[in-house]
Every structure is written in structure tokens, then in C-alpha cells.
Image 1 (tube, rainbow, N blue to C red):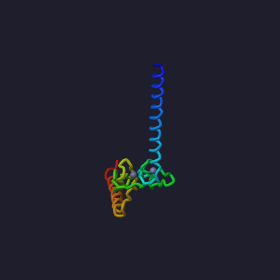
Image 2: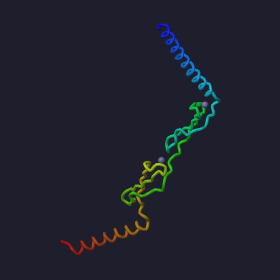
Image 3: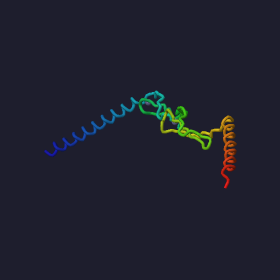
Length: 146
Ligand SMILES: [Zn+2]
Ligand SMILES: [Zn+2]
């Protein structure tokens, strides 16, 4: 009886070792098969933004990466829409305008608008009004003397 048990144990061990070997061989054979010539395909891994550059990486279908071929993609730069006036400039103070990036609406640019220079025409009238006012003041002071 004891020898039967021993024989069974040896048989079991042998089966174990054999199946292990088979699995190992299978795995190695698989490994051997994946040793192919890599076929690197360009993949955009990082899309460029307005201000930051992107990246093209050459990747094989097996997952291998050829970093020596890494190619940066230049930042696209902002694509500004038209200026919108937020505050009109007057002769007394500067105005403000804004424009928004078409790529990313969170990108905004602001610019002050120079004060409006009074035209020669309006300056001419302002002068006349000032003179009239001075004249009226004088007339008033003549008539309403204390
Ligand atoms: Zn490959
Ligand atoms: Zn932008």
C-alpha cells in the first residue's frame, strides 16, 4: 500500500512539473513570437494648446515607444476674435476693450483705449462758448453790481 501511495505522489509531482514546463514553454514561445520588427506609427499624445507645445510620439502596436523620434508640435498661438469695447473712451478718461480667444474662451486680452482727443472743430466751439461765458459774466457783473 505504501509503495502505491509513493508512486502516486511521484506521478502527481511529475504531472505538476510537466504542466509547469508546458506553461513555461508556451509563455516563452509567445514571447518569442512578439519579437517582431517594430512598426512605429506617429501618435499625437499631447495636443498643442495656444501657449504650450504638443507632442507626437512614435508608438508600435506592441506598445514599444521610440523616444528618439519624439517630435514637438508648436503651440498654436491664440486665435483672437474681434475687439469688443467694454467702456468707451471719452475726452476725460481712457476706455477699455477686450477680445476672446476662439480656441479657448477663458483666454482674454484687455487693452485700454486712448482718451478721445477733442477735435479742432469742438475745440473751436469750446473756445467760443468759453468766451461767451466770460462775456455774459462781465455783462451780469455790470448789471448786478452790489
Ligand atoms: Zn513592436
Ligand atoms: Zn488662446
